[in-house]
Amino acid sequence: MAPPPATAPPPERHFNIFTWLRNSFLAGVALVLPFVVTAWLIWIVVTFIDTRVEPLVPPGFEILTRFPGGGVLLALVALTLVGALAGNLVGRWIVNTADSGIANLPLVRTIYGGAKQVFKQVAAPERTSFKQAVLVEFPQPGSYAIGFITNENTAEIVQDVGADLVAVYVPQAPIPTSGFLLYLPRNTLKLLAIPPEEALKRVISLGIIRKEDDTPAK
Image (cartoon, rainbow, N blue to C red; front, side, top):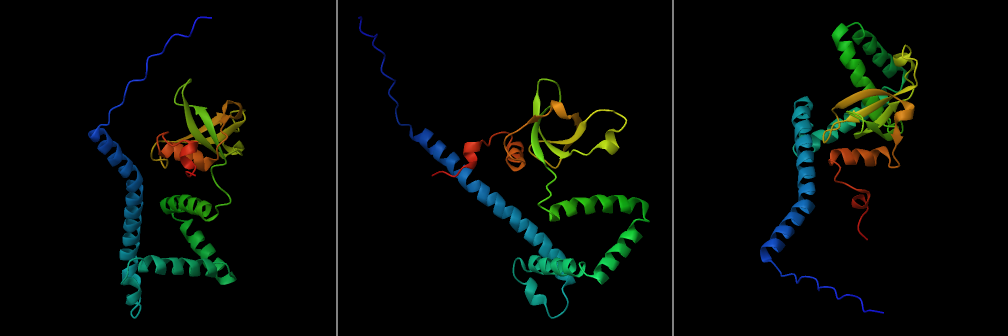
């Protein structure tokens, strides 16, 4: 048997200080920048709430707003008390009276009704709006986008269509709060194995994040 042909040795790699510095810098940016951006956004939100709550603080309690986050703490306490009061008979009567008054205002009732439904959903995390992550052919056949089933009971919307359609929200990357609401046949949806939270990470990261990126290094 003839001996196997000799293979050429791999090319020798030379250490390049500039390449090493560039890669180290980019690795540092990838590690530190998420912490900086997160801290910056939290600071902006806390400062915004503090400056809005401070004028509403009664005399004698100004000390609570003299440190960062004091306004946020007061807002949390106030919202908790309002939620507790709304659970009793008098609180429910006040809320129902306010709802009835707003229902008589043509433009305001539309904004209030939509905002109320959204925040009710946020306050009930066990009833998530995104029931299932799916792939849909969008914006044209042959190309797929990540979507989320938001409602499967759509009879009142598609009663004249005569088809089994479900509501699917297709978010725009990287800002998922903007997107498209589509009513699509159930049999055209391709269910994804990953949960909606993981699929949303793919949208926000422009598809860069993968499953192994979410798993902490051992």
